[in-house]
Image (cartoon, rainbow, N blue to C red; front, top):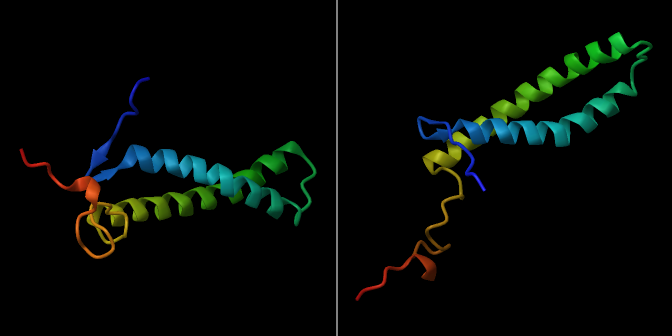
Length: 100
């Protein structure tokens, strides 16, 4: 299996940001657009496509910004995603060094 490529700038893996944005937008944005489409009359395929673009673009943008901010915050260590220490600040048993 080939490893996934990384595109890391300023400590943020933008390849991960793009992949996560895509998945979250599909999982959250598609149902949101479908629900919003029940509120308007879409009589032609052109109207449906235009509606999908008008609704999908802001959903995609908001998702991308949120994921990028999350990645930046996790990179700076502001979040709780740093897993090297236990809740008491001491290293967990997995990270201790073996002394020969």
